[in-house]
Each structure stands twice: as C-alpha cells, then as structure tokens.
Amino acid sequence: MNWSVATALAGKRVLITGTTGFIGKVVLEKLVRDVPGIARMVLVLRGSRQHADALQRLRAEVLSSSVFDHLRCTAAARLQRFVDEQLQVVDGSLTEPQLGLEAEAFARLASEVDVIVNIAASVNFREALDQALAINTFSVRHLAELARAAGGIPLVQVSTCYVNGHRRGLIAETLAPGVRTRLAAQPDGSSDVQGLLAQLQQQVAQLKQRVPAGPAQERALVDLGIRQARRLGWNDTYTFTKWLGEQVARHEMRGGTLSIVRPAIVESACHEPQPGWIEGMKVGDAIVLAYARGKTRLFPARPAGVADIIPVDLVANSIVLATAEALQHPGACRIYQAASGARNPVRVGEYVRLCQTEMRSNAAAYPRLIRRPLDKPFRTVPRPLFLAGLGIAVAFAGLAHRVARAFGLPAQRLAFYDAINTTRELATVFSFYTSPRYVFDNRELLALAQRFEPADRQRFEVDPLCFDWAHYVARIHLPGLERYAVKSAPTEGARAAPEAAAALPGATAQLPGSAS
Image (cartoon, rainbow, N blue to C red; front, side, top):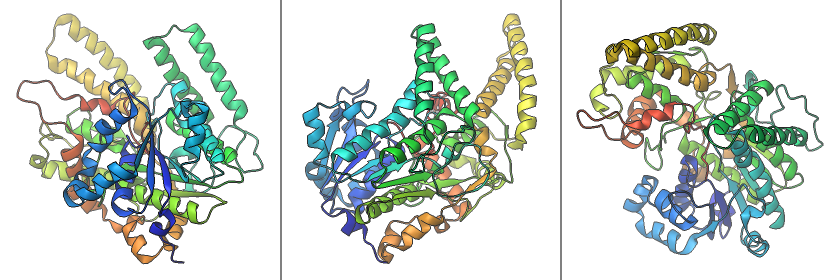
C-alpha cells in the first residue's frame, strides 16, 4: 500500500487537545512543518491561573515555546501563515459536558472539525482522584460526544502502554483487560466500568464530606487514588484512570472510528524538532537528577528488565500516522503502542550504565545538571530487598534527624535525612517502572507505517531501530536535559534550583502527555 499523510489530511480540520503539554507541542510543530495542507487546527484550551483566557495561554505556553525555534529559523513564513490562517482556539473545558460550551457554540464546533486528537491528560502519578478521573476518564466521554455530534468523526485517543498495569510478558496491542477488577466484558470488547466509576465517585463525595477542603482533603484524595489503583492492579492513579479512559473511549465510540496510541516512557526527541528537545524532567530523569545532585546513589531496579523508553518525535509521528489512517480508512477500533522494548531493547542496567558513564566521564559538559563531583557510583538494588531495608532506614533517619535538630548538629547530619527521604519518595513513585517484567509489542504500529508511501515512512519515522542507545543517551538525551530541562546554575551561595521537585510525588512525571 502507498497511503499518503498529505492526502489524508489535505483540507481537513483537526481538533487537538493537550497542546500545552510535551507531546502535544511536538505533534503541533510536526503538523505545521510537514503537513501544510491541513485546512485548520482547532486547539481546545482553558484559561489558567496565570493566563485569563485560552488565547493568552496559547501565546504564553505554546507559540513562544522553543519547540518552534527550528521553524522560526528555517520556515518563519510557514509558521506565521499557520498562526494567521490555520489556527483556531476554542476556550473550552474537557472536564465538562459539551466542553463547557453553550449548545449553539458546541453545535458550531461539531460542524467545523473532521477528526479529534486527544492528547490532554493529567500525568501526575499522584493526582487527586477526582481530578484524575475528570481529566483522564470523563473527558474522553465528552470528546466522544463531540465526535457523534460531528457526524461520527474519528477519535484518536493518546493513552499509555502502562494501562496494562501489573501484567507480565509480551503485551500485545489490544484492549487491556482489568488485572483484578473482575468486570463484565461488553459486546464491544471493553470492560463495563460504569459501576466502578460510580463507586469511585461515591468514595470521593464521601471523603469530601468527612474532610474539610484544603491541604488535608487534597492529601486524602491522593491517597484514595493510590489505594484504589493498587487494589485493582495498577501502580498509580495516572495509569489506572487512563485505563478507565480507554474503556470509556471504546464503549462510547462503538460502531465508530477509534484509534488508541499508547506511548511507553516518553523522553527527549531523537531528531525533531531538534535532537534532545525536551520539556521538563520525565520519568527516568528524576532519578538522573537526584543522582547528579547527590540526593541518592542507589535505587530499586531490575537490571535485566527492559527499560521501555521512546523518543517523543517517534510518538508524535505515530499519532500523525494513526490520524491519517483513521481519516482514510474509518470504521474500526485500532490500538498502536509506541515503544522500543520489543524492537530495540535496552536493559535497565545498561541504561543506568550509559547515563552514569557519560555523567562521570564528561561532567564538565553538564554544569547545570551536575553541581557536585560524582565521586561515588550509582547502584541498583532488587526492589523487594530495597523497600524492606528502606523502611528501617527511614525510621532510623527520622530519629537521627530529630536528635540532630535538638542538639544543633552540623548540617551534614541533616543532609542524610534529606537524602533518605528523597530516595523514599522516588522509590514510592518510580520503582515500578525501573523493575519491569513486561515488554510492549509494537508490530501493529510497524505494520501501519509500512502501509504508507516510502517518503512518509521516512518523514514520519516510528521504528525505534532508527537510533542507537549509546549515541542517544550520551549525545542526544543528556545534552538535551542540560540545554532544555534544567534551569541555569545558581550563583555562588544561592539556593539550589527547585527543579529537583520534579523528582518528587506531586510533580508532573511524564509518560505520555500533559494536561491542557
């Protein structure tokens, strides 16, 4: 077959959510640069605390982003034409029915779009349960409502490979069954999650009645989400609510066109928009940063496990190909996994070695990332042993911390408690992802790429064989963190920059997208 992205998207009106996030920005830049024949891109945004309306937020968080630096230098006229002629902004809320629009405005929007690409998500692993459900689950229902109102247009739903929870082995590109949910299967193949969703909403409502609004209620909602996720077979609230979102998408789009794109752990761009381009610290980077800052030198991991990391540009290309297919060949439910583990695997132990070797042998190249000599190696410890020992260490460190404060002992003694605490917080959030016993298959995605013309297969590369891990880590990813993700080194005597907060629960550690 010789399908064409340009032909599929020519004259089409593409609604995209999540363009303030990491993946969303790369998808938007890719479409502007390589698919100029799109008639219009409709971006659904809501205002924020910093920006009163959607247009202000678009200018401040999207159009000013360094993701467009290459276009600004090489194709400024094309970028300006996109802003002037092809861009439409809708001030809407994905968490509300009809996107929070009046009935007339919603109907008008439905008449003006040909395909929906939903990248928006809350990617906080420890999000309050009510917020995670609203953004990752119920918003999908609202977008499916728009798809139906628009005459049954396709929905491309960006999810995550980790909806598969604690399943092991080779994970196929199929709808993931519940791990411990024991939910009935519906004729469309999805799990019947309506009763579970009602139960979760009831638990949220009861908690809000018991606990007054404020920080205590927020912490309780976070804990509720983690408890329910782990009880039912997921590591965290993010992956649990994204699984629920997939089930809702499949059921709501039954009989229509649905394409689900699941990225694995998304990291810096391999080639486009610029090698190493990244925004913020992602999953593995939190541990890299903690080691670089002397916060931890050991971490629970399974060195023999496959670290399923995928550059963001390969993810964006997967989304574009899935969108083109959905428009040209509608009427099916398809699932694609943008992952490297089955095609170009790197073991956790090897990835750690590559990062550590580059950081210790070439530390001068990373003045913002590395702020103290890395004189001791980073070591991995089996997860069960680590977590058992950590409980004892935390108790001891807490006691030592209180004694040190009481007797006014030197700050070095207090730093020990800080390091132990950082390691505990990191382990709580990330150790599931560093001790993998699964590999995500991507043969359906590779087959999809083969259906497009050769030029598109090159222009929209999705095959992880296109890069070498040693080169990617040392020459692309770590330099990208230094250039794009880490703030400038402080002047002498200044406090350490706060980006280490990205390594802690409550920060936005990113797998596949970001909220918009």
